[in-house]
Image (cartoon, rainbow, N blue to C red; front, side, top):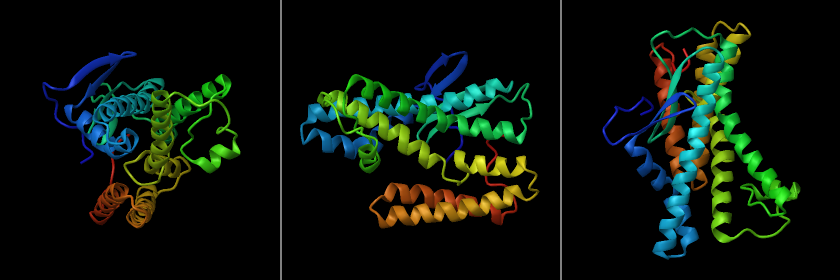
Length: 257
């Protein structure tokens, strides 16, 4: 489920900052499905507006996940490791090159894992600052926090710009925070494992795996009981995969090694 998909002739290929990027053909369909409900709620039954909203949503998801994976890839480069980026149906991967590959220390791998969510959160912060300086109210995805920060004061954005900002902040705040939940192979699971290794914990793999099972099961339960079935399914599968890895006596992920 989380492995790099096979390349096809329908994939989009390009280089960005000297890093090879491949976008699987299935990425676009998965992104559209993820945003279908929210785009429908904005369109109010108008099919033309629905199509416009889907284009905005898919573009935001593409750019946001690309920023995330480029954060990993640039961190790899900082530590002398070449990598390439793949965007696919489950999100994205920054994959170290096989030939000439160096072994990174735990702290370096921790920083690589943290660089992706940090890049997305930096995008969200930049959008908020720009809107605040320009005098516009910001559709912060957590209204209570937005109100306390005074982000709900200011001029109203035009509809399409409001939708663009709403999507940008949702994807670049909620998604990286979800990715930081300590469930392998999400970035949070990587950070826990590498942090334990960095301070010399010998049983870091198993401890991080146990934390991953517990955290994944909790988020899956929360999703199922709060009307978020996709979240429940995703974290249920992650927790089950992590548990299987522990039961087999191996490690449930090998992303940064």
